[in-house]
Structures are given as structure tokens and as C-alpha cells.
Amino acid sequence: MTGEFSESWLGLREPADADARAADLVERLPQPIHVIRDLGCGTGSLGRWLAPKLPTPQHWILADRDPKLLHYATSHLRLPGVTVEGALGDVTALTAEDLDGTDLVTCSALLDLLTEDEIDSLVAALAAAGTAALFTLSVAGEVTLDPARPEDRQVEAAFNAHQRRVEGDRRLLGPDAPAYATQAFEKAGATVVTRPSPWQLGSERPELTAEWLRGWVGAAREQDPELALDDYLAARLGDLPSVSVGHVDLLAIFG
Image (cartoon, rainbow, N blue to C red; front, side, top):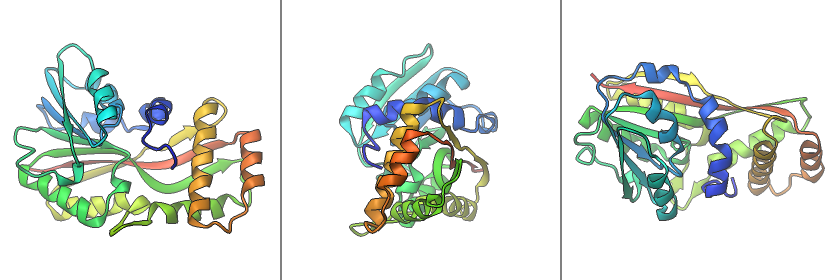
């Protein structure tokens, strides 16, 4: 989606992310949790959601490859009993040694951007360290719009194909990521619990809904330039539908 990692897009989606995440998985986290590593932290919205739900003291290691986002994230997670540090780099290079002393690894909207090999490597590092994982808001590939239009399913199919695109030598998992990660964690000996965590969009969130529609249709067009979607997008933007955008939250616990 165009602008996917911009500060403005991440800020726009933060309230919808917070409402969608499966809060009951937090109650299942193994205790104690003091050190949390957030992969692909973006603006730090997951930390702002999760930190108030966990006992203190906490130390957050916010990891991202974008120095501007990382600076924002480390500057905007300020709570009593919470300390923060930034880790600039590629989250796919995480090792078991990096996780020494880490109680929980988290991420938001990340798994669907990874490949099978990258998820395998991440799971292997977590398994070797025995570190629990809470991975939120992975794209599930299911979108429901009300009222429906005949073009909806065509756009959805093209968007999902775009999510599974090949970038260089990397084939992204897209909406296959939650099931693949679940299987990988279970093979590594983890207990896995998943929950649906759909975005709820519509007239109550007009700016986010409109931006999401533009990105959804834009990715479909990029995947299949033959699609004629100008009238479809104009109609959707002119009368915003109620939208449910499917995501999955995953909790994996070792031991």
C-alpha cells in the first residue's frame, strides 16, 4: 500500500489498530515480562497500546530499519516505569543471542511482509531463546464491504496477489503468513493461540477509510493494470462503505 510506512499513515491507523488487537491474548502472556523487543516498531504504536497493559518495570527495545520512525517511536513511549532504547537494523536478522534476556518479542502488521525463510529464521531464534511472541495484525486476506459491489471480489483477489508478490528474490507471504507462522511455531514446540483482529472502518473513520480504499485499489491496479477501477473507487469514496479488514493476532509460548 502506498505510504504504508509513512509517519502520517501509521498515525492515521493507530486508533483502528488499537481497537482491533486481541486484548485477551495479553492476559495469556507468561509472567514475568520485563524486557520486550518490538520488531518493525514504526512509530511505536504497539508499545503505546501494550505497555499500559503490562506490569512495570518494563524495558522496550524498539527495532526498525527506518531511523526517522525509530526516533519518533523512542521519543513517544513515555510511561512511568518504562524505559526505551532503539535498535536500528533489519529485523529479519534477529538471532537467539540478540534475545538474551528478552521476555517477549512483539510486532504489528509485519508477518505478511516476510518470506517463508524469514519466518522460519525468526521462529528458530525465538525457539532457541525460549522467548514468547505476540504478533498482531497480520493480514488475513479477507475484506467485507457493506453495501457490496460486484467488483469487490475482483479487487480483493488482485490485492491478495499483490500481497504475495515477489520482490527481488523474496516472495512475500501476504495473507498466507498467519497460517504459515502458526505451523512453524508449532513445529518448533510452541503452544500457539490465534485470534481474529479485524479493522472496522467506515463513516466513523472517514479519513482512514478513504486512505485505505485508495491503497487497496491502488495495489490491485498495480497487480493487474487491466482492471478498470476509476468509477469503482470514485463511487466508494463518494459514499464510504462499512468495511471489515481481516487480520490475525498470534501468541506463541515455549515451555
